[in-house]
Length: 198
Image (cartoon, rainbow, N blue to C red; front, side, top):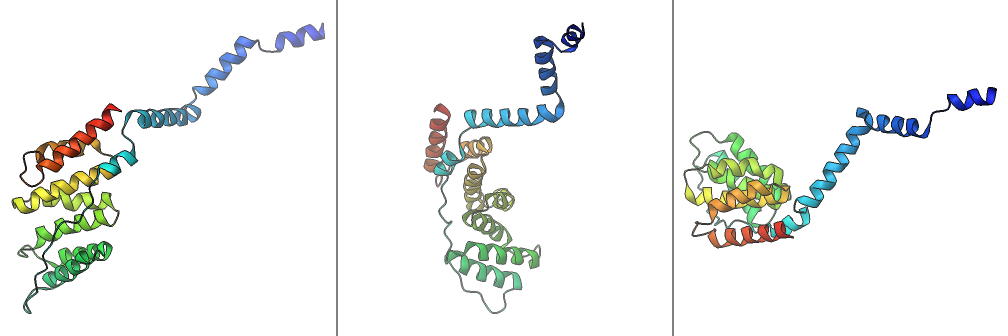
């Protein structure tokens, strides 16, 4: 009789399976499962970071060094020093000096837009694409086409390195008509399409 009572107290297989599913649906268990599942789907559907890095072009923007006159401002002197380091491929140091130049330069400083552009490129070439985006976005809004178009091109490269394919594609589409970047933009768009087709 005691044995029968104990048997009745034990849960059936159906009850055990049901309890197991209920425990899985608790937020503390379900949340990590959802995160892992989303990551797996993203890895399967989205282009891989290595693929995007292969597409990105990380060549330095050209700069012709100009001597600073004695009466130049502190911002201009810092800019000159930064660009000396930039042309010497010391991009981290160049970025620091460009930051300082922008901090001390006032609204009348005529090289501010150029400094912002090279600050973004320096961050990008120094391996900091996230830091590059803000400066490049500001430079891309410039009314000076000679600054705006290259800034958009380097924005594309930063977006590719950070995995933002949609933003990269949008900017590339805007650059396809460029006499300077059109051919390269079209080639990068084609490379993105190939990744999407894989």
